[in-house]
Length: 79
Image (cartoon, rainbow, N blue to C red):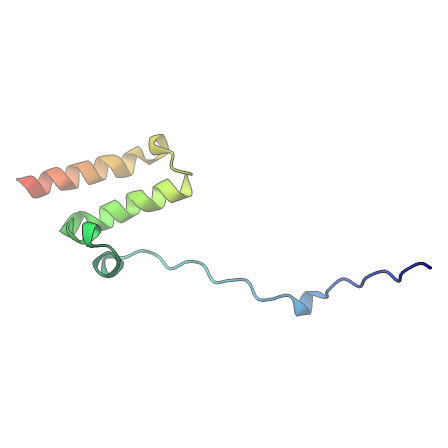
């Protein structure tokens, strides 16, 4: 009473890979997050920092370049 082996799906029946997520841009900040919108010209720097944190599993040490860029941008806005 052996069962016949299950056939494996052929590569042609696999679903297509999902498209990569869209890049974040200034317009995304304006539409999605009121807090980011308040950053005005620094919002793109902030979004770059967020991307870095996502890509490094929230490792702040790996994103110091972005942290410093946001710091400089925000200090420039205060002047």
